[in-house]
Image (cartoon, rainbow, N blue to C red; front, side, top):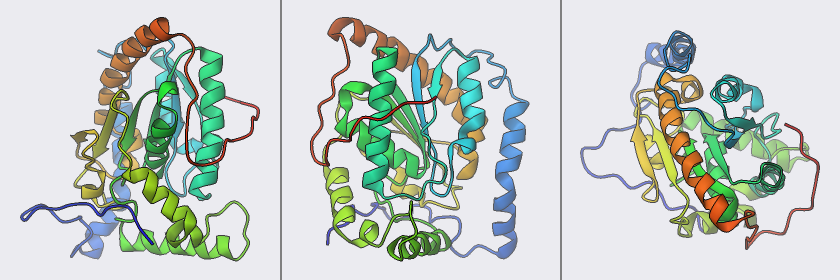
Length: 290
């Protein structure tokens, strides 16, 4: 069985923060997202100072492992206030099979871009960024660009051992027949093989790709977020806190505005977004709710 290529390291690079850390350090890390959210609410970027108007740019938001759309509710609220058109993923808990989750998200992306008449940006946190990358590879004409937040797109199992145990527990539940959860096959079977094959393919050069990572990430080994295909941007943030971090919002304000300008020009030049893809089966149509 093949797996995604492991994250490459060079001598002297920093190790993940959980290695050799004390229980006190782990406890402090758990508190950090609350502090980052508080900092965001008091920041000028939250109030929109210096943030260009989104001009109705569609943005699909995809949450991380064990999380759902409410985890990105602050980002959705902020994007709407800045003139963007955010769309949720309709994920309650991100624990489903990768293939099935991507197929559902593709249906949502197709209907969202058909309804808005222009390609959409995708912002994915953690596992949601993995989905964003795969969708951009399978639907490049419908994706204006992607921004991934703490996403281990180089090696999706380069994670904190405690989180890895949670992943294996979910897989055991799914294998035992609990609906809506991925199975062992998604970790070391055909589904895992297909995921590795997609991650091995070249990323479409016409789709802008920003990967945000933090050496303070206690969930994902930051090396696995540094993707050769991406514009890699380092910030100082917790893993969960990337969804509520002022630096991330400032970055989104700048990069999404650039994507809005680029996608608008491309839409005028080429007409309706395309829908070509290869690999996994064509997803059947379904309804769309924002």
